[in-house]
Image (tube, rainbow, N blue to C red; front, side, top):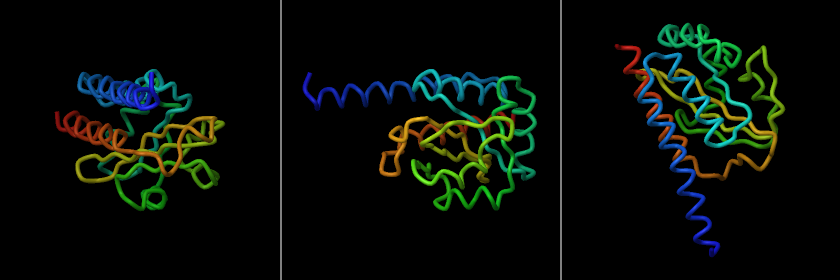
Length: 172
């Protein structure tokens, strides 16, 4: 297999993993299940060791916070923070942030009950209706896993699918 064919094979496999997760999100019957499917899907499809949620404590996000807290799978993977703090980490709005240096400032996004030995992070914001509600966060012990110059289109697409499905479940 040539180098080009190998890269194409890897890219196809990654895209397939995102498609599997997106299909599973469409099957979620409630908000807790939606985020359980997301976290478990990211861990399984991409072997990401640390996946958690950071949500903003604004009224529009309250039903999401309550649903996540009610889940035995998710309640230890949640951090709720003020929107001002959250917005400092996402100056480009809904664009994912990939980092592998100077992570200390991002510890504010980590759940209080869990600490992760992360050397690189993928922080993926999502919205509830038209409000940025929070982020799902991927952490890895390898500093090479996520880097600022990596492509984030597939993460953005999954974030958009998550936001759409979340809106459907809230209004149902």
